[in-house]
Structure formats: C-alpha cells, structure tokens
Image 1 (spheres, one colour):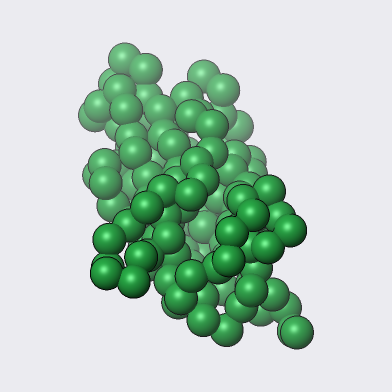
Image 2 (image 1 turned 90 degrees about the vertical axis):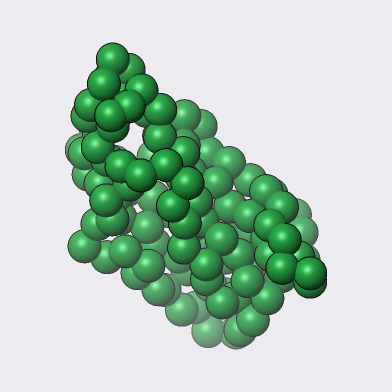
Length: 123
C-alpha cells in the first residue's frame, strides 16, 4: 500500500485555545503515524501543551487511544518533534484503525500561546 503524507497544519496552528482538534479521515489506511512539531510555546506561569489521539466510535463518540507527554516551555525547543504517535495493527497503539481519528490538544498554565505543525502519514 502506498504511503501518503498529509500536512494537517503545514504552516502551523495556533493552539492557544484548549480543546481544539482536527478530525482526519483514515478510511484509506490501516496505520497512521502522527508527528507534532512545536514552533513556539509561551505564556502564563508554567505554559504547557499535550497532544492526544482519539478514535471516532460508530455512534460518533470519541475515545482517547493515545497521548503524548506534556511539554512545558522550559523543556521545549523550537521546531522539535515533541510528539510521535503511531496507531494501527502492530504499532505502539495496537488497534484496528477506525474510519476517522481526532487529534486534539490541551494547554495549561494560561494564558498560553503555542504554535505547532501536525503531520500525519498513512499507510
């Protein structure tokens, strides 16, 4: 099966609003790799951000299947791959890939400003 890379947010997404997400159609793939590159993170007392992957259930509900480690401004370097999540049979998140997944983020230490690039590669 050919490998397809989709730049979900190629030029960066403003992640300062908690609870934002993007839903990705994964019907053409059996496995996906999600990489998040942090461009900047700043703000309140201890700004931080965590990215997670949810599967979309048949009834439309979301269930978390994976989450990256929390990253703080003190530990973040610009343009660093802060989260890499691999989902699908035989991968670290060993599940049958659903028709859609959702990538979401949670910010802490507000007000926090974060900009990230999210890349999804399907196989």
